[in-house]
Length: 447
Image (cartoon, rainbow, N blue to C red; front, top):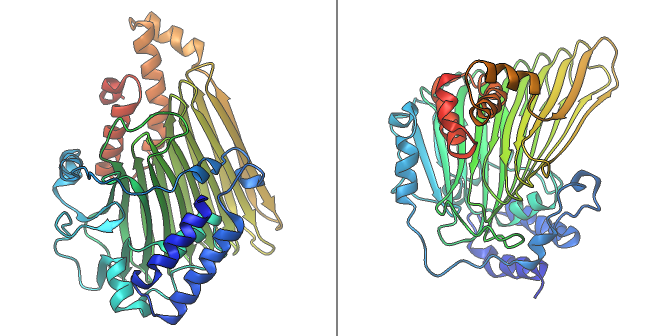
């Protein structure tokens, strides 16, 4: 049986048990979505937007769950003890794509803040999500598969002027039973609302199955964010899954007049990770920051594809992505800034930088500007290089040996991304993740 037949069979066998089954608009959307995936299949490098990242390796895997689950409790305990922010905040936890109420701890929420598992909302109040669930055409074919089969995720709705007093941690612990996790997160911020949301993907098996071409777990995640007028949403995604995982994600934001959206994407795990991140300015005076850092080693692969649509005047966007590549790892960045006709006074800047620590490492960077308006200020750039020998020599003359000097320069390169994370507790959490994966982690404290 081909994997396309497997997914069709899985859909036909389980559609009546999906949350919200029987709701006409949702049934119709799911049916159209699975048909789109059946027509297109997994993306291959024959598609221009997937030229550097083929998912054809997934055609050989059906991701049937394992019979012997691993315990997720110790993983969560470690997360909640790492960093000062762990003592507080709101925690919504999922295990292999399903809400785990026993591990979650939302605490007291301000009036007007609704945080629930999406499965619960689809089963009880599907009208809450109809306008925000998304469309069949949105994203690539994995996003269509997600629309057809996603059974759970986070649902966040903030009423007008409501601000979360502490970060919301949405934790997805994967690989407990191997298999596939398809999750969909909906974040709705009404006018003037404000929140910081940490979307954290972590595996239970740190070593995983590192054999090339044999992914043990699939994560297919879609996060949709609707920011109304003057809303402010900070979204930090931290991906630390097992090395046997394939992680495919789509983050799509829609911004109304005067809204501010900050996206921080930190990718340190998985065998192959693809992140599509988009935002659209649907009102004047919007602001967006897209900020990212990734590390690859061995034969791991990370791909970030971004798009910022300046559809209205006086929008401001800043985009910074950095990659640290070791071994035979490969990193890809493709970013597109589109300035629509009439979007005057647009101010946009995009930059991608990559540091190669090995002769076998490979980085591909393709920043793009597409401008159809006058009176705009736009710039972009990309670099791919090795550690600067003059800087290395300077540190050597100050008493550091070569290994420690290289490690310090590597951290200085990575740390610039973290400085853009405004919340100190989240910055510390990211530093913990970096120390666990990059060489010279013990030197982070001195930067």
